Image 1 (tube, rainbow, N blue to C red):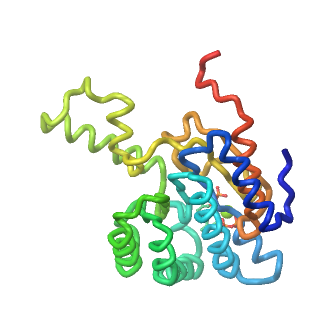
Image 2: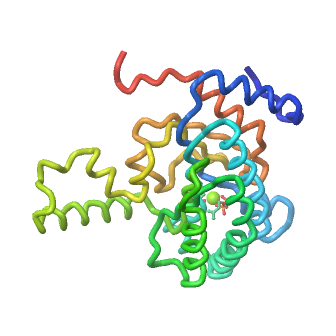
Length: 253
Ligand code: IPE
Ligand code: IPE
Ligand code: MG
């Protein structure tokens, strides 16, 4: 099935109903890439692309709710993105600061729980406070769990988990034989959610850029050249449909 790019609201509902007849992913992770290029192509400063990129994220959260996708993890700012020019970093911090506040009411109304995953120590105090206030304000919501990967790097996350495991063993709170995949997964930022079933990357790059390296061991991958601000509902539904056509073997036959 090819889901057409100019999706009409009327057939959107029927496509969603059709997709719901097959198992939908429980957890979708998205690398929202291509904002800068989207803006540059139009002669705008890169920050304009980042601002535009808020819109598809809002739509995808709603689609997850409609489809019954319980977990959405959105890569918003990587640990390596701190190395970008100061002007871009501060523009992004301001954008997050404003967006969390402006979207909170709507997110709450839709039963979305916000969870920040990433290195909190690096985040400017006032931005972190906004995130933590949003986490608190939405902590009882259970419709969609929206993990915002912000100041996030997967290698750092794995190292931190390894440190915690060593500390627990050293303090006799765990035995070395307890250290299996389940125990280790429980030490990661994503401890409360299952591994992603589907990973989507927009923007045309064929790499994972330090995102969820442990968790995507058996995720299905969907890469598209579409720049994130241009990512439509139709393409998201297409990605879900593609996922449903995959044969997930997990090494078995
Ligand atoms: C993704 O878009 C958003 C962030 C990394 C913050 P980019 O800013 O990487 O956009 P491109 O890849 O340069 O077009
Ligand atoms: C990955 O995109 C990070 C986010 C989308 C937040 P980048 O643009 O930072 O990744 P690279 O540098 O192309 O690998
Ligand atoms: Mg990029």
